[in-house]
Length: 607
Ligand code: F6R
Image (cartoon, rainbow, N blue to C red; front, side, top):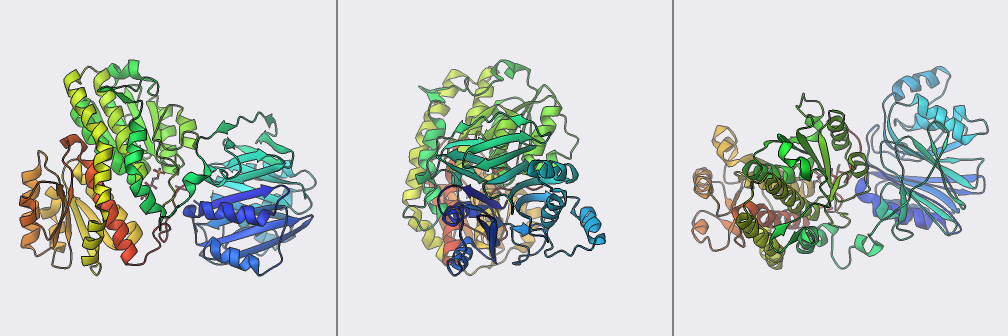
């Protein structure tokens, strides 16, 4: 949450910082700001709204510099106002600072300063950090930062300019991510590697409790104890073209359409000649027979992918399966020991609750695995063992292609464990592998008919609410469909296990509340038909997501979205696609800001 970009070098810092912020806008977009240093003169410009507003504002003033820091905000403390936008400055103008995270003791510290007569300009928790560092600063910036960090509680990534230092700026990490890069007399920092890709893909992921000094000479790293640390850069195999929208109107549509190739990439090398092979990536293969439990822990869309995997694990692994949202898992009294395989699923690898849950499971001795799109993310580094999604950078706030990658990676993992436990017969493995290999083409087949989904979305554009239903693995798909719809179209949508309808939700139904039923031809199909009939009897319009060839379903539906047939274990790979498209088209018809839905940020780095 919140995007940060910093630069020092021979070029115009404004252009580079603004470019970086545009790339990071998916992390927050309620206000934006920039500080540019020209010698010892620091100029600041900030505004409410998007980075585009900031850019326009900058064009009208004469700010410039070869060193600059910028911020795009997702408000936590304090409303969306210009005063609360970053950067923040201490009253003496010595320290200019931007922040991602939450400072938990800002009230106590604020009272201390208030007693000394300091008046605060903003309502943020950030201003206190600028004040504190400034109050501790004599002539040693590192010492002042270290002392301030010793007094601050909570999570913070800071980028700091000192007015009397014209040739360096500082980064601090305790919690939220910061990535650094240096090349040819330039040094950059950003919240996410995607912003650095136009300049370098040789990057340094800051560790917790590190301070970095960035100058034309490069990057020098220190621990919070003040000792120098060795910098270990990573080569990232993404390039800048992957973060461009190309000719698509939105990143979300581009990413939905990439799903066939994402599936191919995720399966490649892990599925050969009808055999699943995860030896290289799953370090616990030898222990598989000793596992008693498997936990899938994640948030949001990643949790829905986990719930699909949980059902597969129930069926194939013989383990006690638990699927939990990370924010609940970490506070529950979970049995989690060396007989537990704990799988943490996160697109970004930066979600604060998922990270905290992973630390807890590690401390309790569980075997932990991260399933993430960003191997070098905090989660990847914390957990050590990583199964990579290989989806490429996802920019749209609503996760789509990474859900597909997660389904594939988690399916492979689950079947691999089953195999290692001696529960997956070779014939069965062959059958499942053959169908997995056919899925990318089937996904592309659905995408080729995307226009049909748009026509259906058009018919439902005026309705205030939707109810999604499904059973077994189609239930998490229904949840994902409802989540996509509400987050980008702002239309109320909720999902229920179809069997639960008559225990309450059915009371909501009338002719203005469509039911979206995920009803592929599977073992529970007949039961779903009964639930659809019950909904029809309450005059709800019915939209079904069904298997192609199921002509009967038309009799019970106002509209149907068909997907190719597949093995019943794999229906979520296909049924989710029309739901993503439905949400996308409805939001587009309603004129929503699809890639930047209100109140949301892609990377949720606060708890
Ligand atoms: C929904 C969405 C969120 C994320 C959630 C977890 O479209 O994107 O619900 O799935 O914030 O994020 P990661 O997977 O990065 O941990």
